[in-house]
Structure formats: C-alpha cells, structure tokens
Image 1 (cartoon, rainbow, N blue to C red):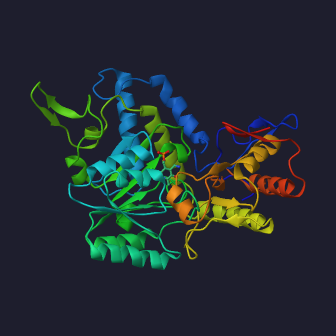
Image 2 (image 1 turned 90 degrees about the vertical axis):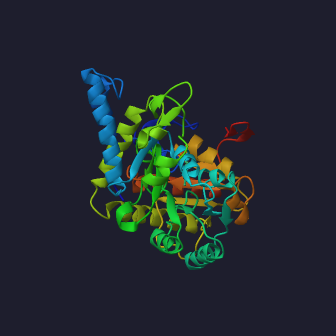
Length: 414
Ligand code: PMP
C-alpha cells in the first residue's frame, strides 16, 4: 500500500489550507466519485480530435466515433464477464440504469430488496410498491430471511447491492443467486461500489443484471451502464422517447427498435462511454488479487488507526466475507460535518459526511440525521493518504481545531 496501484490525474494536487499555503490533496472520497486514471485521460486525448456524430454519420470521423462507441460497449461487456446475448445499455449513471431496470420488470412481477440499499436501489422499487426485507446482523441470517420471504411469496427479481456504500461490506452474491434462482427470481446487482473494487463475472456467477457508472470507476461523470438479459429489456417500455429508439414512426404508430438503442434515445455520451470503457479495461489489466491486497493493507491501516482513536466503525454484518476500500465511522460527541470541515480546511484531507443516501439503514443502526464520516479510497491511493487522515483525526481529538468552525447553509466552514 506504499504506492498507488495505478496513476490517477490530479493525484496529490496542491490544495489550499487555512493554516497557510498548500498541501497535496489526500482524496479519501473515491466512493462518491473517483479521480480519472491517467490511461483514461490518454484515451480521451486520442479520441477528441476525431470527435464527431455517432450512428448514421457518413463521414470518416463519424465512422471512427461510432466504432469507438461500439467498442466501448464490447469492453464493458468483457469487464463484467457478460454472456454472449446480454445487452449493454449506456446510461448517464447507476441511478438511471437502476430506474431503467425497474421499468423492465415484467408486469405483475415483484421485486425484493434489502433495507441496506442506497436510495438509487431502493426508491425505484418502492415507487412500484415492491417488497423490502430487513437485513439481519449476519450474512447467514440475512440469507435465511430472504429465502423465507421468497418462499412465502414468489418474486421476479432480487435487487441487491454488490458492496455497501456505507460499510464497504461485499454482498455474498453467489449465495443470493443460488437462493433466488432456486425460487424462480432473477438477480440484479447494484454494482456502483463493487465494480471499481472487485472483478465481476456475470457468466460465471449467473448474476442476471448489473448496474454501475464510470464516475466511480476512474472516469469522468456522465456515463453508466446496465448489462443483462435481453428478453425483459427488449420488451420494456423505452427508457427515453426520441430519435434512435425506433424502427419506424408514422403519425399513427411507433415501432420501437430492440437492442440497446431501444433505451438510448438522443445523442449519446460517446466520450463518457469511451472513458468508462478505458477505465474498465485498465482495471481488468491489473494482476489478479492486486486490488484486493492493496485495499486490505490500506483498510487495515485505516481501521487500526481509527480503532486506536476510539472511533465507532459502521458494520452491517458481523461476518461479511470481504470489505472494499471504505470505512464509515463516528466519534462520540463530535459532529461529523465539523470534523470533516476541519480535515479539509486544516489538513487538505477530503472525506464525506452524512447518511450516504441510505437513510433507512442509518435509522435502523440508530444514527441521527448528522450521520457519520466516510473515508474511501482506491487504486490511486497510498498509505500516506491514510496516515494523514489518522494523524489529523488524532490532532482534532487531542488538540482540537486551530480555527473556529461555524455551521452554514453549505456545512461547516472556518
Ligand atoms: N448505488 C450505490 C451503492 C452507490 O454508492 C451510488 C452512488 N453513491 C449509487 C448507487 C448511485 O450512483 P450514481 O451516482 O452513478 O447514480
């Protein structure tokens, strides 16, 4: 963990601190949006000179762009180990991909989801009155509760996160697929957090759908994907109405196309897709186990440091098999937002606070509206980032802030 696994753009960029001058930025907010890989920037620089319209453009640049866009689709397919007949639909973000999936569930089919989910994998199902199951304190009990629920009433789909954006805990997907498929339900994985941290192999694990986004996968904002079984997607109501999604339109009738284009009306975010694909390919090129080993080393360093300072670390399950590069924590008697403001203003350490769009989980775990502090990292991180966070928290708890911090509409500011 002494060095980053892959170089990122802006790693350690100088940022101002209130105590004077600048310090290298310690970005510990990868789980919200990760910095871009240098290889992503390089791919975009190569693509930009031929930036042009995609699909149906007759010019040379249009043909190149179309081919880059369609190869991005293939790279994304390979990244998640999709089956030959799975569809890869480009979206704007994970939230769009999950909303699209919600629309594709056949009429009358119910969806089961856990209460630990990010709102993006909770509200689209709630809006359609699907069923929420409360997760238990262990993985084993949670699986039992899920199985009992499916036994009591069949479902078309189980929608579950691949890794929690609150605790970093990885969901036992193989177990969930086995129990869901045995009961006739498909499985959709919200892989927003899993995809940047662990390999996904849809063909090997038999996961039916995955949703994720480029901005957490070391590419810029604006591109996401839904990958999975063609039948539901080809029959679903188009996600957007507009150009590109149709075979033929007359004033009386619309004949919608099938395939990804059915759901991709409008001019697509070509560079977003290309950037996301470049990042996916770079991650796929890492030696097997390298990311796991680096994250384990950094996370152990982080949780050891936090525990020594008396932090309470948020866990969902006592026996989670694996945890990605992320820890959410609080210190009794200290407002998380105020601590985070201090970390940024006096130390150039960037974290995030709140309830991380998982309000039901935070309520069940007994947190107030102020939530907790989350530190998250990835392939561009190194032990120095973790050490600076822990040292800064230590200074906060022992010496207190050097500046006064006041609550404002934006949060806490010096
Ligand atoms: N699911 C999870 C688990 C997430 O962490 C996030 C982002 N915080 C989302 C969904 C939503 O992702 P996006 O911003 O790409 O829509």
